[in-house]
Amino acid sequence: MINKKYLKLLRSTNRFQVDNFIYNIIAKRIVDSLELLKINLNQVLELGINENKTYNYLKTKFPESKIHRADLCVSKNNMDKKIKFLEIDLDNLVLKNEFYNLVYSNCFLHLADDFEKNLRVILNSLKSDSFFIAAIPDKENMFQVLNSMYETDLYFYKGAYRRTNPTIEIENILSVLKNLKFDTPSIYSDSFSINYSIFQNLLIDIKNMNLSYCHMDKKRKFEYKRYFNKLEEFYHKKYFKKEYYLDVKINIISAWKK
Image 1 (tube, rainbow, N blue to C red):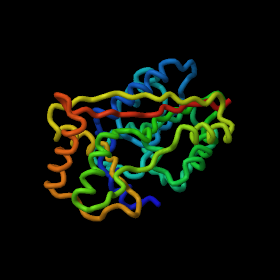
Image 2: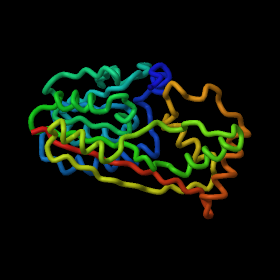
Image 3: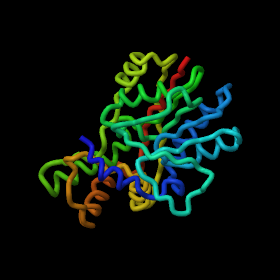
């Protein structure tokens, strides 16, 4: 079960000023798909604010469109007054019925306790001939970090903690989309590798993604510097080849409502 208070805290930074390198690469994949759309996007909903690249693209291509940006919690200090912000509850998602031409999301929907329930709400929020697209982390996403953390846990604690939030298996995603009667559902599995000469830069990029495990059984205490020194040692041993390699693996799911 998700620790909703901790998850909300993770997402309480000013989401409108985010500019994360990894999320921006994923956003480029979403934008590439949106480029192919032949529909007018009058009303758009973004679920989970992790980057501005997709939003900026939509505002440029569809300047008259109204885009609602939704998240669990956002600091409204210095917020652009032109942006319509919606505060949502992932366990009780409420959206206007048959209102949006497009709903999109970048690495957010997998955080819900009930993925199928939220997709049903999303489907009902779409008008006829409207589009849904979302990026969801693959179960092998950033496996180098996870494997190295498990080794570090074993070294210090003689056992391993959960270090990443569970995601949705490809087979389950397709099953849910079909059961809900989404039209022409598809999944595109994508991956890209990022190379770092300095291990700390890799950790900073990951930290800025706010991917921390947020369920109730989360380890209560923060790790000390010695933990990250040992983590780098294990990572270097297995995944260093002139540089530190990080493989990002995502699944882009999309479907129509006819």
